[in-house]
Length: 290
Image 1: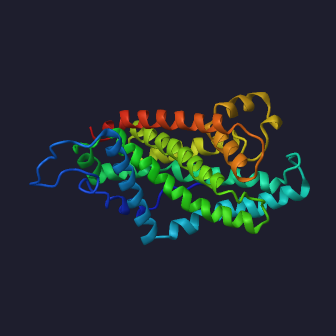
Image 2: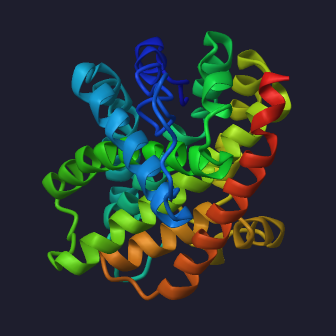
Image 3: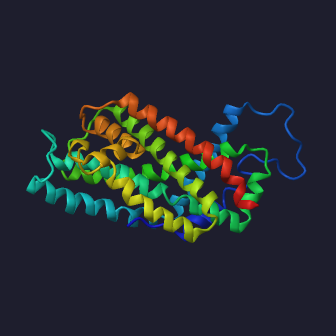
């Protein structure tokens, strides 16, 4: 089962001080001409991503432990079901079919507990300091959402290397690999925003962990990560069609192994979902410090 962010990760978040995120230092004058909103947004996203990279550089333990579960899915579930041919996937070998789904699953499991960091920052007094800076709340949320994407990309590298070693026929087209980066970042951004939204409603780590555990597996099994949508019962197909994870998996399959898909639709859905998630999380962010 997915696990929440470790304590070391939370401690690393404290390095994202208001000063690093663009707040004016004590005694310094405000700039005469504030930055354009899009520049401010990019600066916040870049700062959060750099902090996330620093945390991973200082403590790689979580990357290693999180790689265990995807490896088990590929090595045990994937290899076994490839042999018994229990799930028809047409001309695509089942392990090839499964690998993009496990990649999306790994990103989901990382993102869905990202809201715990927000609650930790509230308890440590960091969130209150961030909210009094000139930085818009949407920029803070966007920065954290894409920082979660950076962590997911690091995990994705391990999964794709293992997939290649197991014989999965991955693309060699660099443009398609760039598309994989975009899709993983967008999918992780949405699910991390969903986690931050839940944090704004739940208000405590225990409640967030409980809700996260309750929705993670339904999101996973209610998508096309393990089996084609055509094999699902009608009610599950309806869930799959409104599940953003299904669109992420569909896009990853199209990019990584070349299966027919609807790439523009998939990316469009993920963009809309990410924007909606950022808006919802931004609206509830202030509730945590009241």
